[in-house]
Length: 252
Image (tube, rainbow, N blue to C red):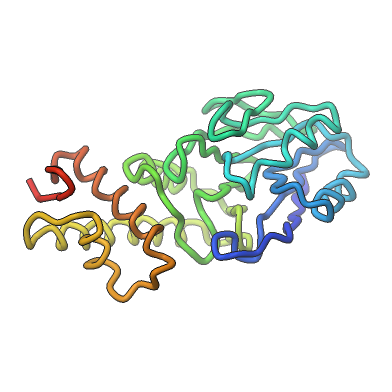
């Protein structure tokens, strides 16, 4: 089995150097993981990398516009399925897959893992001793989380999987997954404790939590910090540790 990374030319604040697309090949067959946006030069790079293989599928980790738009285009061009969660957020996978399914490429079977948290439709794909994580894990940074309870479960599941290598949606390949996953878990636990401390002074709005937990934050990053704080607050509420009255949160 061989894995080739192709970097999409879509750098930015949320994509870093760009989106990683991967070609996974085995015994003359290949699949593409996260073909990314419909950028002509990027699509040509993918086609070139596929030239010596029989294309058998396109795998999508989640619906975000830096990961999924080119999937069905390539699937139609090569006459193969696109695989993913199904229909969510404007992306419709041709072949919906679920946790525990497998996608065959050559002599390899790519295991499908439903790993919600970053988004409800987030999928990871494990093959050999590696796992493709999309935006569930990025290299060198944390990620925006929609559902913190689900995300913490996902992080522990990936840690228990104990891959030797992570192929993230953005950034360099991660060769020390256990250390990185431990850091991700520790960071979220620390952030949760900071939220709890912020609530210790009495009822407070989400905006107040953000101001307390992220002092001096650049204004452009406040919306993302608000999403993170809200995800932590909803996790704590689900655990019966906090409650919301009107716009304010308080410890129970």
